[in-house]
Length: 329
Image 1 (cartoon, rainbow, N blue to C red):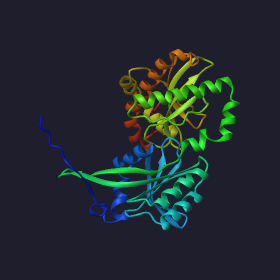
Image 2 (image 1 turned 90 degrees about the horizontal axis):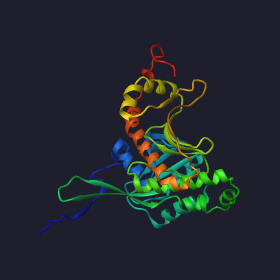
Image 3 (image 1 turned 120 degrees about the vertical axis):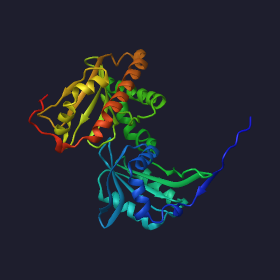
Image 4 (image 1 turned 45 degrees about the vertical axis):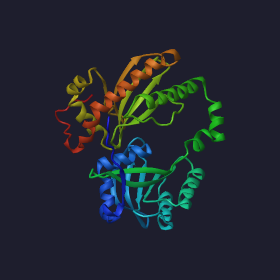
């Protein structure tokens, strides 16, 4: 059998993007392209602004990590990295309390790659520095395909598991906290092998672990309750528009539950800042032999929440909520 294979050809960035501010930054800020960047660094990104002032400088793109609501600043270069941009990155980090910095360039010098590695080593977990090289490729007359390659990234082991303080705190955990940490560590491994759309956060000794759903002030959580022997999933709505957003979803409750295939708990929580939409079942998280079954159920429900609520959440406009005519939950 004769198979004709094409040849990959690398394309000069300047042939497509003549300028950073006028061409590359607007391209990267588009939803599909910022999603590609997010997939590369493992963060669900939502663009907040372009050419945003941070102190005396202007960040090319300002994003939110939709899972944590922390700032993510993106600085672009269509040539080899230089000291000027490195200085700007440090200014951004100094001006914000919790931030991830993403430096994109055509090529990283060894010195600047080492500088980001060093910054990731000496800073605490509030700060994360990524260095990415961007490439363009084509095969024959095919459309151009962008590719991000990670030159430097935070070292999770160094910042968390590798710290003596964290080890000491882990050793002093209660039995319940140890179980939660082991449960979420196992679940994170399960998700990494069985899901193409969800990314787990670092496992922590708590009764929940969070997942992004594509928009700031919304996130999903998988839950375990060792007191009531229950596991579950919740969509949490927070921020200044949590109540209008909740009622707009609640107005579509029948269609949502029909599409979901199950009844859900709708908790408006009028006296609290956050609202939530819940699904729980009776399962004992302490029964380790049933973890594979529990993990399977949790992942299926999380992906169903993503599929049913994700598109609706992106279309929500708080100003469309009118209190009259919509029931209080």
